[in-house]
Length: 124
Image (cartoon, rainbow, N blue to C red):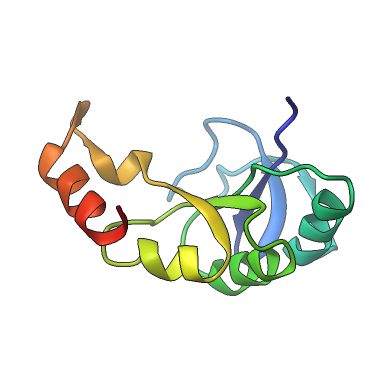
């Protein structure tokens, strides 16, 4: 099954060249930067029946774009990037079908079972 993925950086839909996202100025390289908002892509996925796609927030300043996409296709997309036990429920309420928590649950190369238990208590 095909699952589309939209990366958001600075509120814009981008396809970032792997390994170039860092805090160092001038390091980021992109294959594609869209002039269309994330909600446009969500509508496209909804129209084409592409459930299970991802909206990934890469850094700060992407929350509004992610919420707009989830609002267009509620229950149809996952969201990731900065998700944790404290905010996961908010993203599910905003329309995400699932939350992606890999970076938050894994620390120092190992699964943090305390964080995983916190997440389970927060959202089940």
